[in-house]
Image 1: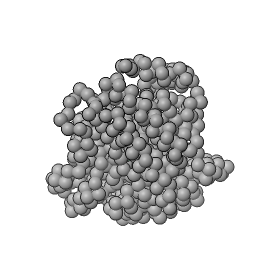
Image 2: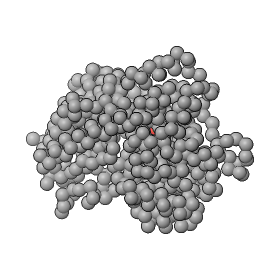
Image 3: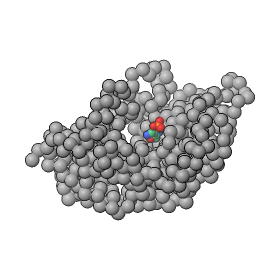
Length: 454
Ligand code: PMP
């Protein structure tokens, strides 16, 4: 029996009237009704009321096993008591930002204890601000203009990175970005050592920016050998290496991917787990480079201007420090990863049983599902090794949309596209519930001939 997207909406909508009503109001006062383009989902996004551990609840009282986790911010799950208590205490002291306070000092000390490259840390107000500031620092430090970014890696929405993030990699992803700015961004295929070396040859590259998980939080994996090669080539060209550890930071290990892989960059950009799920971010790294932020020398000597009303705000400082204190021993990361390993195995089992031509993969506490359209007949069954970066990042929107609504109808929420992240709060009960939901959703897509079978 074929199930159309209209049928899917009909199964989804009736128990979600409160969300529908809020979305109708939102569209009148917020462009597209959402504050982040990926938050729109067919037929309307869900409006959430609260979270508890691995679950979150919408305004109509439906619960969801949460693999979105505030865009990978909640390593400990929703509402962990020590983080709530730390935040409540900070609220008691007021919330006057733009002043110095003890919480920001403790917060920076924790970053220095955990992240291998961290000597000095400057807090900012979002992840995007951290890559923006890092780009300014590396240019000031080296006196060079160009930045290399790897195809398919995501570094926030700032102008320098609005090309190369998704296929086609040479296409600018936003109107309003100056060509002159993008002329200083070089996109290199992820994992292509020769291409990286030749892009570095001119001696005009300030830094190479990398998501050490591989692009888009391991949607396009990178091996440790490839990360080591990137570091070697970057150093040989006397450029700086910047790890964007927005997702991997405190997740791949207490010290992030750089601890797990034993490759230490010059600078690291952080957010998400860093702030315990509150707004904020940071640039951290070698003292000699971070010292560019110290007022004193003139601009001609490489002084980097950086202000920001909400930098180091006491709320993210309190929630972030409480989170990092718990995350320091590696136990939450291991629990989250154990769940991801079991979930990947459960989904792979469903894929095999249903005869679907796809696969599950992912690093650390993440998972990604690759599914392809029956319209693009393939000689070989799909494998990770046999699938190009472009293909991994280009699952047709009809497949993504149908999988997402099928899963939400069954009480599972993904991070984005066909993937998710796990937390230390995800246990056996969630695994059983999610396994069933993925089985049902994939069966529906298969029966509807939306996805290729073997
Ligand atoms: N870099 C990476 C690797 C990210 O995953 C993100 C957010 N998903 C960002 C930068 C941007 O962070 P923010 O959304 O806080 O601006």
